Length: 94
Image 1 (cartoon, rainbow, N blue to C red):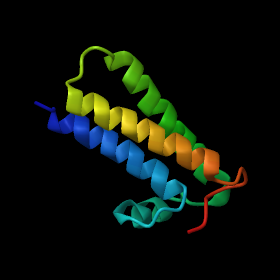
Image 2 (cartoon, rainbow, N blue to C red):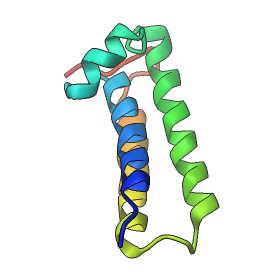
Image 3 (tube, one colour):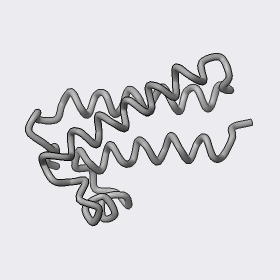
Image 4 (cartoon, helix red, strand yellow):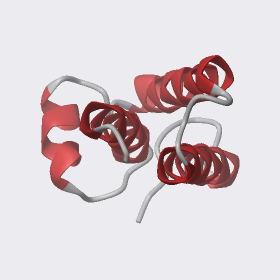
């Protein structure tokens, strides 16, 4: 059974990255308030979240159930894809 706090952590890191890259979601208002959507910081914020997700995957390899591993793999892939599609100067525009 998936650990709720683990699922919450992965979802939080992914939402932070996506908000920094311009996705409109519940995290966007908080990210904007915290200054994470400024162009000069948006990509850095998303890259930091990706690094944390990747580290989490490396450190938990072999210790996750299928649902947790799938969630983490999908989050990494999604953020990596968004970063590759985003302009180097800042947040992607929707």
